[in-house]
Each structure stands twice: as C-alpha cells, then as structure tokens.
Length: 147
Image 1: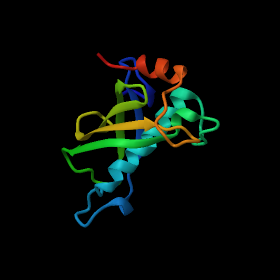
Image 2: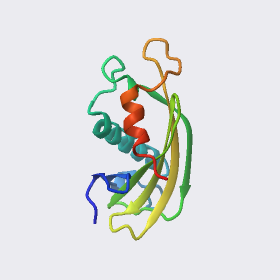
Image 3: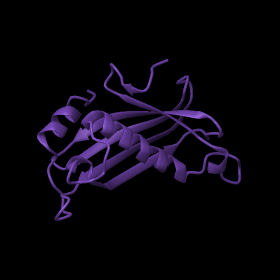
Image 4: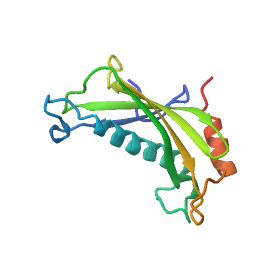
C-alpha cells in the first residue's frame, strides 16, 4: 500500500479521515464534504510541490487561485468513520489554469468512491485578475502530467 505524497506514477496521495458528524440523514458522508476534502488535499499538494505553507499571495503567489470549474461523480457511498485516500493527478497546465483529477478511494484501493476534476485559475494578488504561473510552478506541475 503506497504512503502519502508523490508516487512513482506521478500521482499524489493524501489520506484523510471522515467523521460521524459529516454524515447525512442516511449515515453516509454528506456530498459537500467531498469538496472540502478536495480543497484540503489540493493545499497539501501545493505545499508539498511548492514548499510554502501559506495562502499569502505576497509570499506564495501561485497558490492565490479561484476555482473555475468543478465536476464530481459519486460512485459508492462513504460510510464514516473511515480513512479515505485521495489520489491527485495533474491533467492540464495552462497559462493561468491548472486542472487536477481526483479519485476518492478506500485505503486498500479496492473501492472507488468518487471521481472529480477541478480547474483553478491563478489570480494576481493585487489586481485580482488572471495571471500566469511562475516558471517554477509550471516546471514542477508540467513534470507531473500523466500521458
């Protein structure tokens, strides 16, 4: 079973725990928590990739982003409390956009709970307009593109 972090196949794994208070009336993980888990996993990914644990655009301009597009497909319900493995894959790097695919899996990889795709747009911290990624960001993320 692979550990969290960057994998040899260019994916990035983040394992998270779900809790009883995240359930809906059916006792399964409420749909809104999938998006929260994606946000948290994306931050862990950015911190690991860029080496900066801040959302301050003056210090880490490449993590000053807005979500442009999000799609989420639910396959199997998640029954808290359990650990869920999120597998992130860089799908596309554009001038100011980054698309990352997500898989929500059981820790043994036997169950695929959900699939998602999220595109973010880098924004300038002063003008709040789209801005190009830094050369460092582009280089690091283009190296993670899966063919």
